[in-house]
Amino acid sequence: MSAALLSSPGDADERAQIRARVEAAGTSFYWAMRLLPEPRRDAMFAIYAFCREVDDIADSDEPAAQKRQALDSWRREVAALYEGRPASTIGRALRVPVQTFNLRRGDFLAVIDGMEMDAIADIRAPTLAELDLYCDRVASAVGRLSVRAFGVESEAADRVAHSLGRALQLTNILRDLAEDAARGRLYLPQELLQAHGVEAGAPPAVLSHAALPLVCEAVAEIAQRHFDDARTIMAQCPRRPMRPAATMEAVYRTILRRLRRRGWRRLDEPVSVSKPVKLWLALRYGLV
Image (cartoon, rainbow, N blue to C red):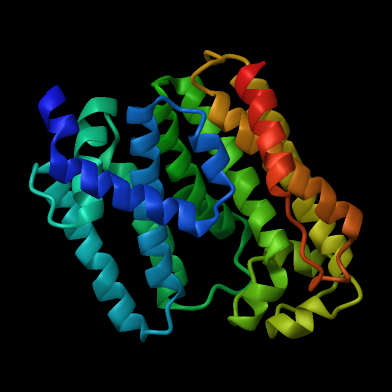
């Protein structure tokens, strides 16, 4: 891709719009993205903006049919992107990263498919296999796009995306149990609910069950194994380009540890990592 295209005024304006959107979102990923050189950072901002856009569709209050239509429009935009004629600001922001970093169409489509799982009906007590598929689509697929934007195209990097994506998503699920229940959603897997005698009924009833902590701990153990696998596999990858992945692993591992320390009774008590801690982790894993 030519330097002229990378620096043209229109592209610069659109990149600024995308960057502002990411900053306004307050995502934990922002600190990891800032470790990247500018072209790769812009790629990650565009990937994040795409994910946020389709996630907002899935989480909207529109009827399921309308959500499906909106997601289908993004499938068409992905097709247009790979044909070199994207129509949206986000699509145009992705044009250079797709060509420069060899981002795969299938990963963008997998993210849309994952959001459609949320859009067509509220997910309630999926099977472990369904939950794993959901995590692969909404998180690990994002990881597969991300590692290429970081500059690593290897089987090991894709395996990091596989494990780290699942670890991050399961941590999000455990962190957002009460918020999801208010939406009518319950991502705790039915096999673990059944194993601990919890009927997979209305989400608020599940969250008030006496055995809920046992179910949550079982999910936390799965997340912990994925974190450990991701860290082990990351050692097989070049260290410098994978610094953002290492930062995210550290941030979310900290969140999971704090969730387990808080316990599974005070679900309305928020658990997060402060900006100073995120910055410290970014510096530690970005510079060491």
